[in-house]
Image 1 (cartoon, rainbow over the protein chains, first blue to last red):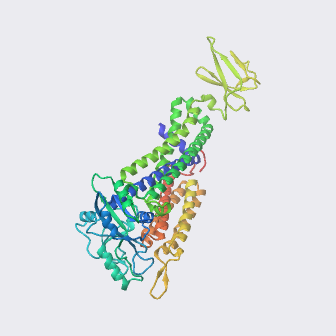
Image 2: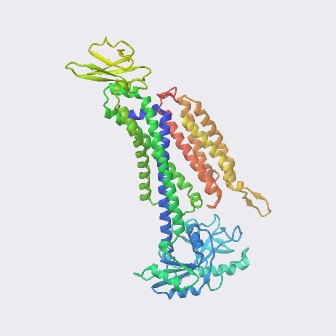
Amino acid sequence: MNLIRLALRNIAGNSFRSFVVLLCALLISGMALTTGMIVSGADNSLRLAMDRLGADIIVVPEGAADRIESALLLGHPTQSWMPASVVDRVAAAMDVQAVSPQLYLATLSNASCCTVSDMFLIVFDPRTDFAVTPWLEKTIGGELRLGEVIGGTDVFVPAGEEKIKLYGYLVALKAKIEPTGTGLDRSLFLTLETAREMARVSRTKAEKPLEIPQDSVSAVMVKVRPGCNPRAVALNISVHIKGVTPILSPDMFQSQRKELAGLRNGVVMALMLILVFSVLLIGLIFSMAANERRRELGVLRALGATRSFVFRVLLSEAGLLALYGGVAGTALTILAVMLFRKLIIPTLGIPFLVPALPMLVALILGGLACSLLTVMLAAMLPAYRISHKDPSIAMREQGHDCPGKCHQSLPGGQEESCRRSAASQSGDCAWRVPGNYRLFRLGEDHAAEPGCRAYPPHSRPRVI
Amino acid sequence: MKAIGIIFVLLALVIGVMPQFMNCSAQGRAIELPGGRTIPMKCHWTAMAAPAVAVPLLIVGGLMFFSRRRETLLALSLLGAVLGIFAVLLPTYLIGVCASDEMLCNIEMKPTMIFSGVVTLGAGLVGLALAGKSRPGLFTDAAGSD
């Protein structure tokens, strides 16, 4: 019987103990993978969202930065306005290469004139836009026409219909942008011309007309000249243009980043606690198991198994349980995260995009390694202790070292020590002689054994 | 095998009870007809059908907890796995849920039923493997625990 088969039999031999260790390994790998997936998924999502916006600086009305960031990140619609003259003033600022205005609108709540409630609408000007238009040229080979829109990856045309209704105005979904895991996935992008037409139609067909304030914009996207410092440009804008807040692209979503950092710290702390408790629990379980199995392992040793073999058998058991638990935990975590990701985003208040495959594989391997290391570490000490027990001692139940001491005089004047193997109550004593083990019990006359001198404190061993 | 029986019972409770609170009708949402009459949405019928999977699964779990015969355990594991498949099929193909991705049934009920169904299926397959490996007759292990 090889090592793995023996370990597998031992695992099956005590299903409850194996189940508890497996559950710990499952929890560890699941928790580690969840932490990794959420943190890397949120990071990935934030990076993609910034790439999608495509601007070095976003200038927004003073005091509206958090609301606009939240709208872009989580898709919670917001409306904030500043004078359209800001666009020209920003364009005139030093080292600004290009500017483009955007208008932020929203569909009505639970209104029959809108297919989707509270959908965030991003209106851009195709004449000046440098974020959406280049992407459109690449994907649909041209610009959006009147009545055409593009949507995030989660936007779809309802079954049985051909167009999406916005304020009673029907628009055609021309294309979808790649998933970002943010509110952009649930937003619609439309041109200024389409937005104005929608506002005109809404006066007669919508439950409530769409109001677009004249000569107002919601945000100005800014591209800085190559080689120039965007931070200096942002500072220049905030000093010279009153009533606006410039947000640097790397500084975008700062509040969400702080939340993410807090979440990461919290989850890592929880993970560490789980790891520590799991090591203790698994260590305890393996210690108990090792004590229970002294006789079995002693027989194994008496049959010729080396200490290293017994040690490896025990570690193989731990490793197999960790592997099974780790694989189960990994599979369940991936399934749960994929299925419940739409619940995770609003609950945690962070964007989330499933990490790319190489990253996912790395995280899975990390989770498995975490569970393997924890279980092996916990099993190491009990496995070492039991594998180094004297077989004759190990074969006795509930043993500990003999408080007394006896010696056997061997030919040539050598002496070998004798240790109590069994419970002090039973008073068993194992006496090792070359090539064999002889068992004695305290309380009997030991003098009958030739060549033996015993020095137990209370009584003497006997041959049994 | 007792552990698998317990897992079946817990999953049966999840499959049977959770959809009753996670469907759109439970949140007071329904389709309003032009005449003013309201009819429940698809997710309501999925929630109504969920106990049809959950109750047999509960019984299977209970029987698994007390059974020791290999053949019985094999049959119960197989039945549990099949019920797991039906728990997945109910909100996906057999009845379905509401069309909008943003509705509660899509965000909570459907994932819960799919997750529970997949875990039930996995537990059933593990049960099949364990029962299949044991010697014919009584299912016992070295510790005699189950």
